[in-house]
Image (cartoon, rainbow, N blue to C red):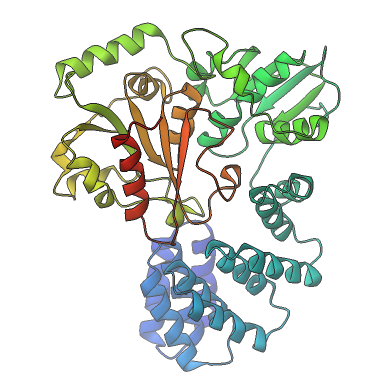
Length: 467
């Protein structure tokens, strides 16, 4: 007969394998058999947290602490769940309690730093990361976190070296190439392999490095997911475009797209905004494009639907990012918040939301006022190609900070991006414009969790015909 500890250990192995539902059932089974076991309640809390059931995870941790007060792991985890629900002060008090019981508990320093950074007190958060480094000076996550914040603050000299620690965290992989990493060496007359390292939004944002390096004299090879190749055929300067897994040609250097941004900064002291390169051709204001026949096809499709041309502006909207993204809770917006746009008779809203979040169209009472693209959009011609062609037929795109924002920005489509209280580093801390995309306007959240005023600002910009 296995002990409680053995069953919990088995559940944790299942949990770490990604089978959270199965682990949850094991933890619940243990609690039925041993309801006063505090460790079981903590395991349950972790599983609930990973399912984004933050309220239930809070209750699980409180139960554990009622059974065992001297429990720094439970205090830390409770603080983290409270952070996700926006209860900043109580979250910080829990972290303080955890540190009083275990002053060298590294996870608390990380979580406490993140609490204050996401609350908008960036300098206060930085201090906790720096305190964490006093305990663990070679911890890659802390260095990576510092790098992200320095970049957000525009301190690129400190930011890039710290951000490079991300490669020591695990989870990122380079292609099988023996070429050295490009760190800003002279590139004219040399060849370089570029490849993605993170999400599709980053990929569309930084594919620009192919054009930047080619303009500096490099021969550029890009390796990417086969689904992205059709969209990236429009990028100027790519000599060879290869799918992941294919045999690589010999090259002088290699770099992920973000590595290449880092290298460019080391070489030039500036970021590769490349605004002048947005207008390489008369008919293109961005650095991505799709074929004219595909754009015309979607124009005709819109004409045949309720989107037929009238006095209304065609506005594409997207509200939900990937819920697995570590910051999604801070950047995605409930579709309900878009109600003022849906009720504006001068606007024709078109959903650019697929997958995650699209179910909200059937949950709001104004869902019928938002036109939907066919379910097979982007399934035959490559990732984002249909969506890109649709965007070329829109007057404006309004979106949260997702891949849709980067696609619209890279196409040169007028775009408004609604940012959370503390945005991704590339948007910096203030300003309503970004040098990354001349066609883009930024609207920033003033208070965490409050999106109504952000949507209101985006709406106002449309009504006043601001670009």
